Image (cartoon, rainbow, N blue to C red; front, side, top):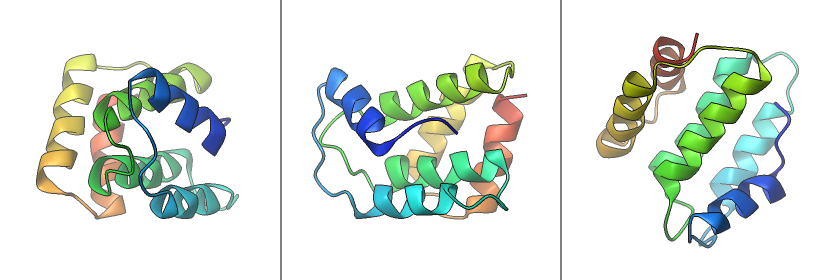
Length: 111
């Protein structure tokens, strides 16, 4: 994935948020540098960092949506926006921490 931590912070700032705690985002970016991990799993780590750990003061779900749209554009995938919105809200509401489950949810929305 071609996104940096600075890019993600800039996107969230555009949604009115500020970084409260960057440790989970740092961990996610360390993981996505691993070449052995698939693209959906990388996105799942970023989603968990954003939607479950709430690193930003505001705009966490909007930042995740932007990230998903960027991911789909970069990898030329189609998005079912209704399913994606449902998955984002569900992951955040249920505090879903299982990376495999998050990846499965993302694959259902982004093909």
